Amino acid sequence: MKNSFLITLLFIISNHLSFSQSKLLLENEHVLFSFKTIAGKTCMIAHEKTNEKYLVYRYGTAEHIELEYPKDKSNSWSKFTYEFYYRGGGKENLGLDINSLSFENGNYRYSVYQDYSAENESYSCGINVTNLTSKKITQIKGVYFSAQGGLNLLRDSIHRDEIEK
Image (cartoon, rainbow, N blue to C red; front, side, top):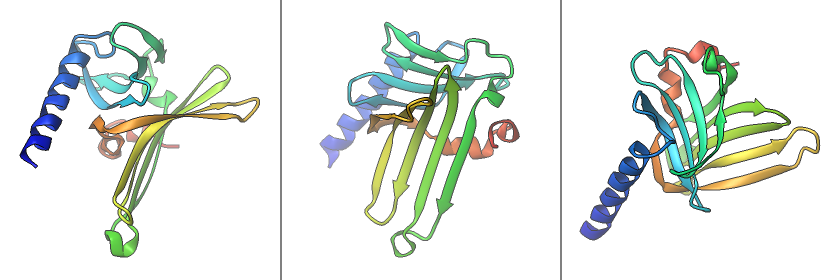
């Protein structure tokens, strides 16, 4: 138990250092939610630290960002849609905490998700990418123990009215 705690702590510290030394997180930004994918890439949702002036999605590695959305960060909060479903009560009530943050870029819809089910105490995170023409969905699975922050933090955001539709 003690060793697994130390390993988890070291993983979290190394993740934090790798984000702060990469293109994925700028000095004036705070991580809202991030995780590593099974393929070793990082999905990161961040916002400007001081006044939460903007929200941004980045995907890639510390050396190469494959996708940053939006490029123009003015009114960026309104370019995302946040949805959640929460049912408390634990295992007896089949508790759920389902969260997603979505946006459209070109012919694709990206939906970052973070879910918890009390029934089997399972956690999951990832990205669903939908081709809007063919309706084909590509799922990019996340490694949940690598997650930092949480999409549920958007429930209390000062920009909540801009991102919920």
